[in-house]
Image (tube, rainbow, N blue to C red; front, side, top):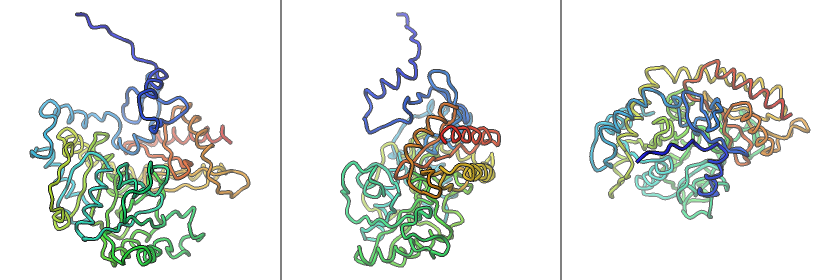
Length: 437
């Protein structure tokens, strides 16, 4: 029987089919969504053949670039050998990956639990903190994001990502270190880290005086790349530890070189008790990990399994990704290129009043758009953000957005980004702002 070859659909046709069958809550970017067909490095191509410079990378997931040859080769070799076993059977890729993660972890850690998403990892870490401390209250942050499960939605500090009211008791939301919009109307450093110190009052007034722990993102990703000032994280964690809690560091977006250091928590003066990792760990293949110490891991007394946790193909991809980051010196490269990117974004801020704030570290930079009249008005400008997206798309650049009001550009190219890529992206951003303003 002859095989009939059909031409691929157009981007518009595929977008229409997508809209027809996918949950309406899943809203792709742009008035006419970009239907991607292929990618290589930082370049992606849609079904109509148009190329784009990808400066978002699947929400900070394609860390070493699309279709990296070493990662692809590892995936091909593993899928031909063994595709799936579940965690009930040890495989070489899962053991090798766990050994790498405990060696690379920020602090002396020696146990790993694998699952399939950042949501699962955060959920596991919080349950582990509760089991270890035998307490239930967890401190999370306003503007923070932890995923889609019932617990994760309760941890999330944004109504945008809650489909129903909180279903999990014991979650207390502290103020985020959002210096541009300080909840106390203060300025760093004269504020003396008031938002961090307020955590003690939160514990004393809303709990029984003891907590299981705190879950923190070194940079609040979905929240709009909110970047804590120096000393904030140590101050917050020290308070929680005084009240019996442990520190869960959510490195789902900040890990694996993204911030110009191996982990986002590096250089913050504090060591986590538990680390969660996902996204860039396997350059887009679904896997996440919870990394911790033997005593904390041992607090989980019941059975524990994730069907797709430690999938050998995803583990092979993760092993190759970590090796690429190390062999190509991508952490140092991300720091250097991050400095170039930040200098360019700061220059745009001086040029366009609509840019209220630029923040971030390494290749994780946020640009907050505000009303540009009158001067100094910090009113969030989500409408301008949507228009700006159309301008960058038209010129062939893909970026992300976030923040409570959807008015923050999230700029996060793969760690292999070059100076030429950054110059091209900055030129497009400049032209797009000029068209908008």
